[in-house]
Image 1 (cartoon, rainbow, N blue to C red):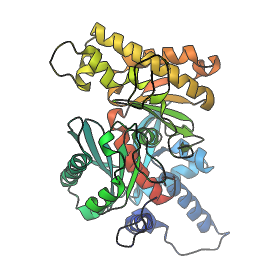
Image 2 (image 1 turned 60 degrees about the vertical axis):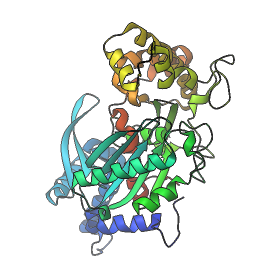
Image 3 (image 1 turned 180 degrees about the horizontal axis):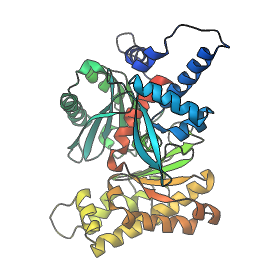
Image 4 (image 1 turned 90 degrees about the vertical axis):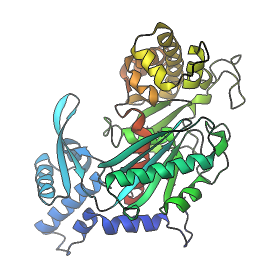
Length: 417
């Protein structure tokens, strides 16, 4: 939970700040009318649409399904809100058909999303209406300390604000995504993390002290899943598995339209599912974990033939160039990931499996073997009906999900305690 220390800004203050600053909030403060009047009905319908949009952009057709209002009513409300400059519309496609996407407008305040990995930090700044205002990525040295990583994130954050022409005072909250297991109550990184130097560090307090805003901490795969149903192509999907393939392998779960954490927040740690009891020792202490076969670090080590350094970008480049050895390594890793996802899908029966992380840029060379392993090991009906796709958000998903978590927490449309 966010701190309630009166010397620091808490989540209730975040809610108050966003409510005070958002144009949408101002639009809802109106003079009461007779509950049975036509003006009261129109006002309720308008508030219903605005409330639905606080959870993220949506097509007009989807708004009609979610609110129960007719398509004509939605169209009229959206037209009025557009005229008042409370929402913006843009053409999009859904299921191959042309549609109109609607999103809230509000540039009076902003939120930040920060994704910290083993080798990078990415910062995005967005409006509470889900408009991306700025973005930067910075490389980090492998094995960086929590202090060095925090310093880099804070410096990048201020650079993004400068790029966007925003004052720090405009930011009302920040979400931080980290790889590895995070205990939901304490928000501490646990043993087995990709960032062992960060284990036990009170990251939330440190970032709140440095950024002077309320901070939410979550696992990066959870945030990737949140981004897919908020910013991505799957905004109307209620059951989704998002798989982050990077230095580690983790899954974020959306079940029944809600983020699923499990009892202590550790749901989705598929990187430590055993696929070979006689396999190599994993950093978690067990043998033959999925991560020991399908992480980018393992793939890079398998490709390295000399002293020349290789990175994830090289792995992607070689795969796109059709390098035989790289494609073979990706094929083996993808098949192993598909096998583990199949077991998870047999329990959840998702609408879609989305593969994200830095390897998303590889495209079919990764999703094909994942799908093959998935179909082989899943219940036939699930394997046949569940698409395995690459994330259109690429390696931006986790940072975008962190920003979305702050917006949704403040508006009460999602929980992240």
